[in-house]
Each structure stands twice: as C-alpha cells, then as structure tokens.
Length: 312
Ligand code: AMP
Ligand code: TRP
Image (cartoon, rainbow, N blue to C red):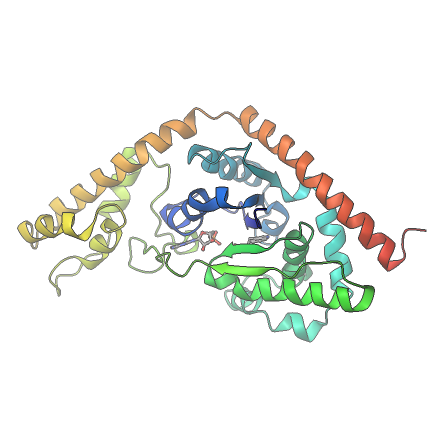
C-alpha cells in the first residue's frame, strides 16, 4: 500500500521560477510514489488577498501549472480547499482545543505581522485550518519548504489534542522537508519572491524573461556575475557553464543573453502546454477532485461529529 501524501499551495500570485524549483517540480517528480493529494489553498490565501478577480485567476493558474508540468489528474486528487467544507468545519473544532499562547508562538504569524500584514483572526488561526487540511485525509507525509515545518508540528499537536480528548481518530503526519531543494535567488540576489518584486515568471513570454534577466543585478568584484550564475546553474550543469563563463569574463551582456536563451528553451514547451489547457479543463479536474476528496473528508467528519457529541 502506498503512503498518503498531502500538500497545498496558496493561489496568491503569478507563479515564478522559485515556485517551480521549490514546490511544483518536487511534487511532479515524486507524487506517483504516493497516494497524492494536491490542494489549492484558496481559503488560506484570503488572509492576504482580497480581490475576487485575482483570486479566481490565480486558482486557475495554479491548477494549469501542475497540469502543464505533467501531473495527471487520474493519478492525484487535485482539488480546491473551499470545495470541501469539512476543512473549515474541522478547523473550528481544533480551535477549541488549542490555546492562544500556543498559536502565538507561530513564526509564520509573527513574521507576517512584522511585515505589516493585518493580524486578522484568520491569519492567527491559519495553522488550524492547515491542520484540518492535512488530518482529514489520514496523511502520512507532507512535503513542504522549511518555512512550513512548524505548521506540520501544529497539525500533529491538533491531532494529539483531539485524540486525547475524544479517542484515537487522527493520524499524526510527518513533514518531508525539501532540504535539497535550492532557494532560487531573484534578480536582485535575494530569495525570489513576489513580495520582493524580483521574480522571473514561470510561464513568461520570451520578452518578459529577457527583460527580467537583463535586470539581474551584477557586480564586478568577483570572478563572474554571481547572481547570473546562481540562476544559470538551475538550467545547465556547472561543467557546461564553465567554458561559457571562462570565455566571457566581464562580458555580462553575453552571459545574460545566454541565460535568457536557456530559460526560454526550458520554459517554451511548458508555456505551450499551459496554453493548451482551458479554464473548462481546470474546472473539470477540480470537480473530479472535489468528489474524491469530499468522500474521504465527509466520512472522517462523520466520525468526528459522533465522537464530539454533535451527532445525536
Ligand atoms: P510562496 O507563494 O512564496 O509561499 O511559495 C509557494 C511555494 O514555492 C513554497 O512551497 C515555497 O517553498 C516555494 N518557493 C517560493 N519561492 C521560492 C524560492 N525563491 N526558492 C525555492 N522555493 C520557493
Ligand atoms: N501554508 C502552506 C504554504 O503557504 C500552504 C498549505 C495550506 C499547505 N494547507 C496545506 C501545505 C496543507 C501543506 C499541507 O505554503
């Protein structure tokens, strides 16, 4: 029997190369080893995005991206959080089990508030909605970036609290931290992130890719333009790059043009595949995924309602 894998991605903006190497590719490479669930965390993204037009477009883009990268809907359950109401229902129950001081220790919450994001009750309770996502499906493995490790610990704690209060119900999940996944740098050398406005779009057109690459910050102190090289390494082996960088020392324009071409060659087939996937295709995939996810979640919640005493 395959282990069960569950992961989620917030539909909070245009996908970039950081998302590709940090989340989409690792999922596409490994999901078939597990019974995999891929959830678009639309209710989570409501903690930062309050624009219905953008949210709708982002949800479609996330699903399109995974399909364009070859994830097969018949081999993974692809669904949207808001389509399975058991998630928000179970989150409430967990919120009655964990304490405010416990939730106050969440790094992600503290970081976001420090960055000036409004400390809504939703942002504060975010980890309990994520716990519900994971626990409804008796998940074994949760692949996430290091920043989400604590959230998986919170899910274990929610499972544990519930099991102690009402009897064994939830499986405690394990995080699978993607340690070997490189942090992709942006055009300014910091971590690529939409909040730093330093991204290279995953499905960008040639002109957009070129413009982003030409804007990479270079300095002339070292052997080679490190910010260009760090991104280039993701597309070509260091052996392949050695002579190019050796022969073009100090010639940043040529090196950037070579990088833009390599990214374009890599992105073009994916961009074409993405274009062939319609909004209707996405809706069909999500409807199918909703059916499969809901069957499991509803059965789990029936058990939960019985155990806590709201089913008479
Ligand atoms: P975000 O929207 O920034 O939360 O990112 C969504 C997913 O993409 C997370 O799983 C991140 O780990 C991954 N990710 C985002 N930016 C990068 C980056 N610069 N390098 C590697 N992974 C990233
Ligand atoms: N919080 C995760 C992030 O921002 C997204 C997410 C929501 C998630 N629910 C999840 C990830 C369940 C794994 C499992 O990246």
